[in-house]
Length: 267
Image (cartoon, rainbow, N blue to C red):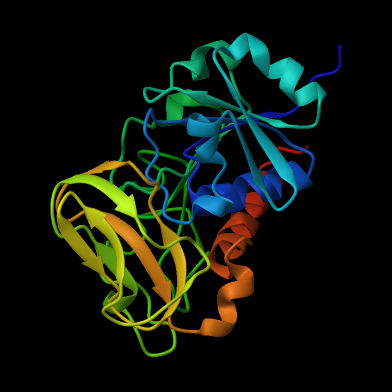
């Protein structure tokens, strides 16, 4: 039987999903490993939502939740992407992928190492290229976004989002309290500054600026105080793009493909 190049991507959030989507379109065979309770904000473009719903769809590509690695072939056979809850990366030993991409974006290494696959790539800070993984991809907005790093690290996490239309930290909303979130607004809504977007227990979550609600964490999610729970784009005309992969994710995805091709990992 002809060998089919198989990749594992750790993480199914919106940036990871941009990479996963690109790899799928390039005809790679991909398994996605997710955590038990994904906390994606841009849920409409996150394959990891399949953990809750059984299936997810990003720009016409379907992700399907599986319970065991043995189900991968069946899902691949229907031109879908298998998604497995596997926080420790145990499926790596069984599947033995040709390459592994850590796209968790945790700003720290949650266990990925160069022994996991012949080629390893990580997105963002928390990894040193040549030590933890073979390559690191820069994820910070700006001139270096998407740069392939062969030695060293990505820019450290500043905690301040990249500036869009003059707004930086205001774009991201963090939970004002700990508790269960109950959303009053949905992704794609046009919201006004100081509008109540959700309630965390009895504590209101206010819109930090006027714009389009680009993302908000899943209704009913238990959030700790200070957790990122929503994202507002000040450009109201971006409403049409709430269900599409971002420019940032596509840039990073291209760099991942570059690394694969440069190292002879062909579809």
